[in-house]
Image (cartoon, rainbow, N blue to C red; front, side):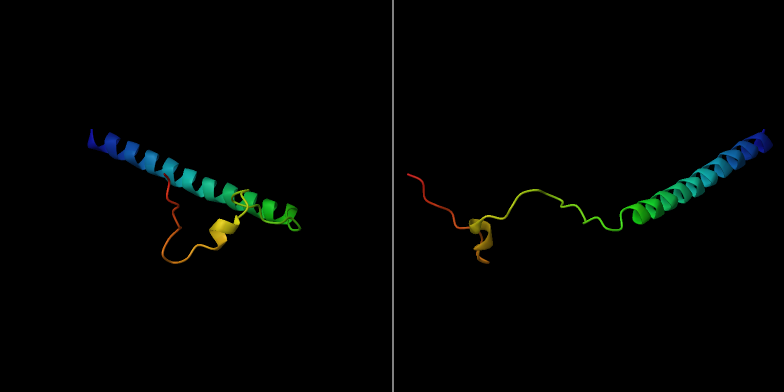
Length: 69
C-alpha cells in the first residue's frame, strides 16, 4: 500500500516538474520571438489619458479643492 502511494507521489512530482520546465521553455521562446519581431516598435503606453494643467500644477500639499456652494 505505501509503495503504491509513493509511486503515485513520484509520478505526480515528475509530471509537475515537467510542466514547470515546459512552461518556462515555451515562455522563453515566445519572449525571444517577440523581441526579434518587435525591435523597432515603441513601447505601448499603460494609459491613453493626457495630463491636464491641473494635474501638472499640483503641489505637495495635495490637490486644491474648490468650495462648492
